Amino acid sequence: MLVVLVVLSLISMAKGVEFVHPGVYLNADQLNYARQQITAQSGTHYDAYVKALNSSLAKPDYKPRGPPASGVIECGSYSHPDHGCSDESDDTATAFLQAMLFALNGNQTYADNAIGILNAYAYGVKKYNNTNAPLQSAWSAQMTTKAAELLKYNGARWQQEDQDQLAAFWKTLVLPLIVDGSTYNGNWELSMIDAMIGMAVFTNDTELFNHSVTFWRQRVPAYFYIHTDGDKPKQCPRGNEYWYNQTVFNASVDGVCQETCRDFGHMQFGLASTMYIAETAYIQGVDLYREEQARLTAALEFHAKYLLGAPVPDIICSGNGVKLSQSPTFEVAYNAYHHRNNVSLPLTWQHLKTQVRTKLDPEIRLIMVYEQLAHSCNQ
Figure: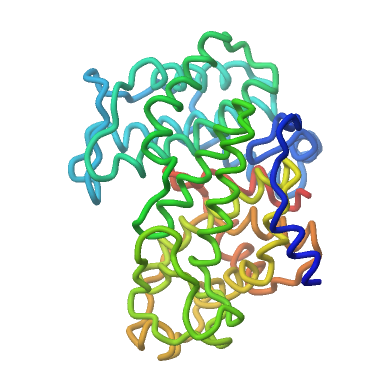
């Protein structure tokens, strides 16, 4: 087993190897499976599809809210100031959902709306500014790279010059803000990595793809703890991470996250991005899921336990309790580990069944948009 893991850790994409398309977050087989369920009007994909059609993000007459006329998106900490930031998040989440709906049902109206949003930002943004500029640009690119890949490789009527402009926008305005990662909390860098790996696949950039994989391999072991790390977490690759008063590190807290004791909202942002990156890498032939299976499955079960209402012992967060919130994620991870690799995750499944799939509009417009539509029971 050790030999296998060592070999896996060295795998990246070789120069000259062709990328799989569509290959950001979803591949052709996954889309075909979802289409079959939708056509049959049965299964979890169809349930999510019906919800998605009724989402405010899926309006056929949707008009982009941004970018600002100045072309400057200015985002401060906790949305102060918010000049075009929330508008961009709404717009790019809409672009992704409508691109996904187009890929599933072929309605060109959805494609046209998504393309209109992508063009508005690719041609209209001149700069990201203020303290949250790197994070905001990463969130946006997490959505736009997924949307672009779905549009390009599912037959949307999208001009090549517009595709080139979007790629240039990412390269000149977004990538310089995120390529070196982040010294802040782990969710920042994981959003950046997801944005970068999406850009890499869309633009067939092997070097950027491998850079993204390297950063994931550095960040994830330092973000989620498992007892084989020893009596303290692995060293953060960039910056000095604060574990928010989590002081006990042993097998009893396997899966705890650097941001668990901050709040479950930020933890779930980091977890979701972790899995989105791993999914894109998996499609491209790099199995990050397997490399960190023990760590990530522990993280899923650890957090699902408390989301389901289990009492929080004093060894968690130094007895200060946890700030719970329910985010519409875990679907990609559950599909990868349970359906694809037969890993038992009973608490994760209970959380999905009772707390995630029951949401009427399962999206958080920054990065989480209808995971169930894409990845429920979809190998």
